[in-house]
Image (cartoon, rainbow over all chains, first blue to last red):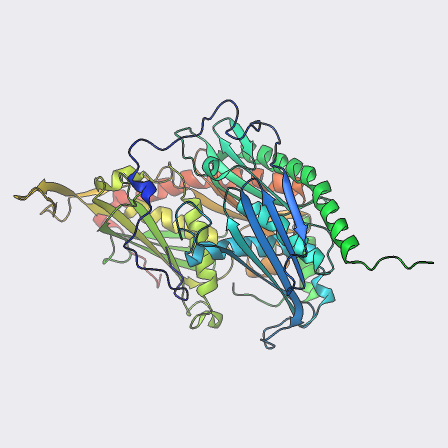
Length: 272
Length: 291
């Protein structure tokens, strides 16, 4: 894979001890209940903890925890853009950067491969762009930085949710919140909001794959879609419908968190 | 991507035409442009193919090298993709300009081939844990007129069909180590089974309809596109939305269904053409780049 020449990794002489495991790796079962007690074949997302306004230096920020997955997002801007010659004078520009902490995954540094992190950032940008009123910020740049502190599955989906929450916290004008949801298809059954083990389990069944969808609930628009593995087209469509349902389930929680953050930041009503 | 500036009047013209299933060059919404495929164009590679789709021209070269297998899958070989956007295509690609597009295209190719059945990776293993074949698939963009994903995927399929991997056998020497020996006959080689290699179909949403194989002008009128990689059996190995706009869920379902239909129909004529070209052998007329 093309590596990122700007970030210096350590020397490649060390290996993770999990490669030297004696017995076969623990394979999560493909039928019956999931490891954390949730149901398969049902829209059972992990309970989510969100909080806005954690990073004091940033214009807006958000922190999301879903199961063991932890993400932090901060938004800077709108600020004057550096490269004036390329800017479209009529609307602003959104730049995204999604990074993984080296200790976030079971194998150290496995995500610090520049091109893979680029593809996450690109999907984040494509998912957020339709929701922002960029025409209201001409000649400006809005920066979104997502840092994954712990990767325990469906990182892309939660990053999208976290980023749109941080943008709302920063006061950037938006048409709607963008929510993300992902599923993992394994043969004939699917699991919503998979954990790391469920995501990386390559069992021997015919059709398995993962799907991440970014959705704008009030406008009923799909702003991001990414799938890999192999699935039939009917499974893909059913998976998209399931993800949309998952997004609707998450919507009230995110709205609540945003309202709480606005209340906290607003000045108290004057004593009359 | 190389872009063209389209005026408002042109946009309206293209939009209205597509609404009535008539595109600027007379095609219907699901027709491809004239496609030419030729394999074995570069003699230094183990497999190569040239595809020209309208004015888009792509050259793929595959080289097979012996390397160490990945630690997690010791009994499989692997493929490495690299897309180079040459400055020949447009001046925007000069220097590092084409790097971003190249990385995006390679990442999508990794995603498309990231499954068990596209290429039989276990046939690329020489000795488990020590030696395996690594296929370096290098894509060169020569001319850019829209619809890069489709042209690249057809070229990769043709180049993989054309790839001749030399036959090796492993022998153990005196100290017990393994030695890899190439067979003496230069024509003794292994071919790959490319039946399940997927083809990518790009569908651009223009107005309320979608078009297959959009030119640069049509791309400038669309806000979002859907890329879908389909095998000959109709399984989808990758679906991705690109572009800065959003899509209605109903459009997404419509587009995936159309993409699957178009993609599935692409495989049979392509395989027939490749087999026909192969069967001509020495008598084949080489067209090359100036034909």
